[in-house]
Length: 367
Image (cartoon, rainbow, N blue to C red):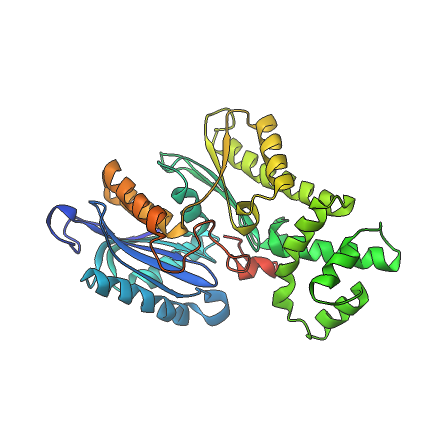
């Protein structure tokens, strides 16, 4: 969603490098901000807290976002820019993009503002031009696609409410379900009944369920069980392996539906795999995704995203202001070679809890 009029008369970063872009990648646990010029110079970066409008309200969320934005602008020696390119968690529907875009534009940080769901940042960070599909699997799961002509494909990504399955949180919940039934005899035996409680130093699933129910183990720690599931699958457990295969099926289904909507199913197109679960490159999951994708979209190329999502927000902004290719490559080199922002995780856009808290609870986006 675009707000305001982007013109060459917007804030300048000096001579040939004008105009300038404020790039924002805001996830639930952290926000990365960068100020870049159309000539490819990175003038300032900053990191802030998570962006959670559903939890705290739009106003307080924007107040929190203002801290790293002002820090990055100060480092750049600017008070505003030509264009704000913001990729935000919890912007799942166009109406949410419009509301967040209006609130962001009202802050006066740019002559024009464009807000997208933060999954688009991961997609754009992994491709040279705005063309491809990205599936992001962190706490939840989401998928977006983009054509050079501006057409996009996306999903609501509201958890089970919108038909989603997968992500670290969903895998943990499914593993707990199978393990509980295995221990009390209702389900097939699985090593998960032993490996899940062992992760928390407990002997049985009964102990683990009680600890989770009483809050002795905080509910937010359930995401820690996703890696346990993958380790159990790697050891050969049938139930655990079936869950990994189910996730691969879901990833490829989302990708092929997006490709079909964009009329790219038979095209040579990149399919980017991002988020902590996919970026971990678990052998079984990685091989299954690539095998299924090759069968359903033979000309598509799957690859894992290794660039920070704020790069994607910056590139989307540079696309908008008409920056040359060489400028975009300079910005890409900055973030890929130096990480760009201190403490950033280049392997994916989430740490398993970042994107999106709403998805984990089944009422929000994964992106």
